[in-house]
Amino acid sequence: MQEQDLIARVIKGDKKVFKQLFEKHKQMVFQTALGLLHHKDWAEDVLQEVFIEVYQSIHTFRGDSKFTTWLYRIAVNRSLNYLRSHKNRSKHISLVENEKSSGINKLESADSFDPQKKLEQVENAHALHLAVNSLPENQRIAFVLAKYNDLSYAEIAETMHTSVSSVESLLFRAKKGLQKKLLEFYKKS
Image 1 (cartoon, helix red, strand yellow):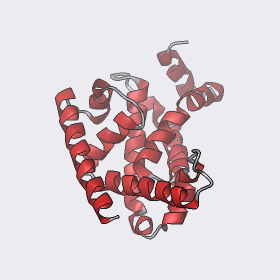
Image 2 (image 1 turned 120 degrees about the vertical axis):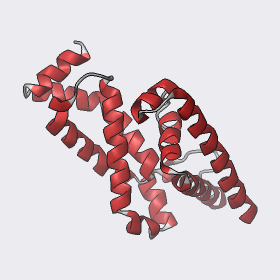
Image 3 (image 1 turned 90 degrees about the horizontal axis):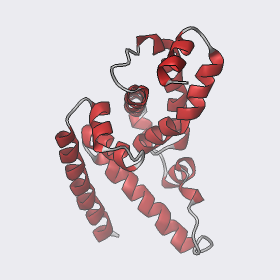
């Protein structure tokens, strides 16, 4: 069944088809939210919010772009809104709480029983999260869509309502910014 047909059926109230759309796209929405929020519980909250919004507003989807582009845009906006509304709380999350909630504790390696290696993994992941969070909003969005969701430059440009050359520039600046932040972190460590 074509995507347009699925959407038409959801608009008519077909809950089974909506469930199919949810199952098909939930991982993508979760990855986007997790990439922007770095907190598993928050990403799950955003996942629910996104699909509530999709269910309530799917009739506004015009089909000018792909459904996934529309969905990415909602996921990004909901994630950024969630982050803004939880900004004060996010500053006070401990390293251990962040480890548990972001899934860092699931890192597996030959050294997984070595507490020192485990601590280094957690610290490295935390440093990366802080560095990504410190990027300007458009750079962060482009980076997450490229690296966490593996979108092409064209797909990112469509999602962000910008040009491919702008996406290239955003990603270049994001990578430079991350290099600088991570270099500073490792010099301090």
